[in-house]
Length: 262
Ligand code: KIV
Figure 1 (cartoon, helix red, strand yellow):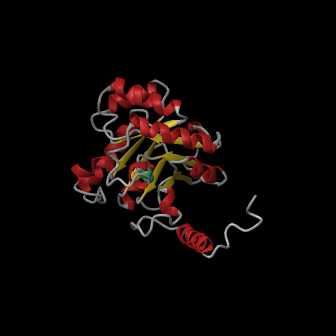
Figure 2: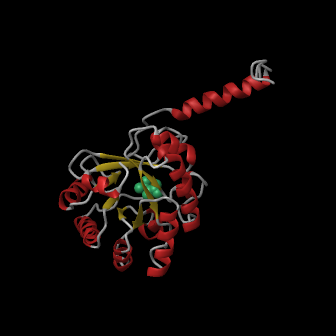
Figure 3: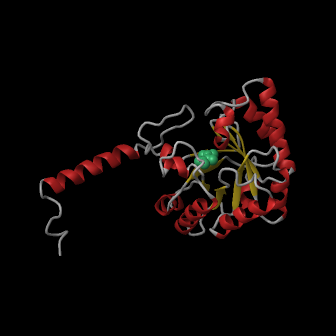
């Protein structure tokens, strides 16, 4: 999948797989995989930089990582880059500046958290030729307002609010929705209601696709295991074994061998 048209055409035509990537080599691994598309998430702040929240990501940071990922993918996949903390809240001109940085860096679409209060910004970006995906449910940039990283939409009223937001996103021209940590039933209602793809993370099995963080799905996260993560490979164990073998070979003098020397 390389374009937003292919992304949208997959609605109802087979589930979409999406992984995050932040760096060149992650992108090279993804380029060689059947994963459909790649999100340069603002989770770069937590996963790569070890920050407690995603707030430290800036448009410049996102653009730098988007460029590294785009080089690694070499045109092989549809790339979505995150609008970082408050980048959609400063008005149309700063939002256009942020989109300019991300699209010039190689993104094919941007993802914006939330919809309330920035419908105009979203409409303007879409009318300007920038495909926009809206992230709803647990929006990590609002962690303080939400009182923590908690499942959203658990009451009828809260579920109704997310369903309305999803419809508003589609009406504003969004090309997709990411739904994070909402009950499966709510995600199913939204997936059926919208004509655009709905990608879930902690949103159950009924969405049009799934997204996971690269390090989580490969077991590179040293035990960070929210309920919605499945570890598809124990890459962390392989890394640990490799590092131990390297240190031991250096310590016992078996590395480098004559063959590995000039
Ligand atoms: O930044 C991120 O990683 C995300 C998720 C949806 C995985 O937004």
